[in-house]
Image 1 (tube, helix red, strand yellow):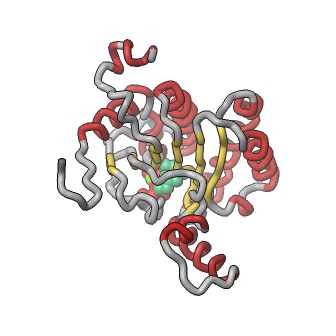
Image 2: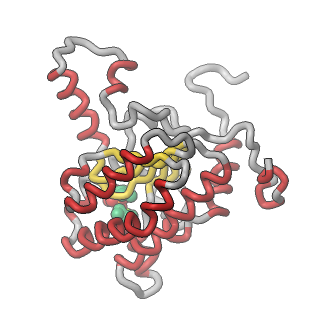
Length: 242
Ligand code: IPE
Ligand code: IPE
Ligand code: MG
């Protein structure tokens, strides 16, 4: 593989890549503030970082990437900031839509997107529909997502379906992530060490990584560092080493 030969990737073992990396994209506001800018500027540059990370993950051969873009709790932020986040999302879709549809990338979302501006919802749904059979990297964006609501939604749908008891395999079918594997690695930028209601069921055995870098600065090199760190971990899944 081409990347094996590149010096800067010399430490990545391409036979042991994480299949699924999930990102809690935190620190946009602090990043902007430290530059004397508005928080929303951080979201704008954060969106650029998101694009860079998708491209690089794809080049490295990562199969699934998830991104926490907007939580069920983020509605409690000032309306101007919330509006600006969706304006940036709208712009991004407009700019990237054609190239995504013409690539082999599959887009999916998790969360109740019906509360987002309706034009954004229909554009997202259009891209999801047009990329649903794509076989390249799966890009999963969490929008109006919260793990607790996801679990409660699953339980309520199980009740609606008339099931009296479910095992883990059946329960998983009711989660937003039914089509994708659990994350092997969860990365939260900006130094906070918490999940903030992200993939709590699915990350039960994920490796967690908390770089100090704020999200807008989290680019190619940082991703490679995270993968190298992941590969140094010893995943035991409750068993004995060896
Ligand atoms: C993450 O950055 C983006 C969203 C939650 C939408 P923040 O906006 O949380 O930035 P900080 O944590 O306040 O620096
Ligand atoms: C988590 O970040 C949500 C996203 C990255 C979208 P927050 O900034 O909202 O989380 P807290 O408030 O610090 O826990
Ligand atoms: Mg934050």
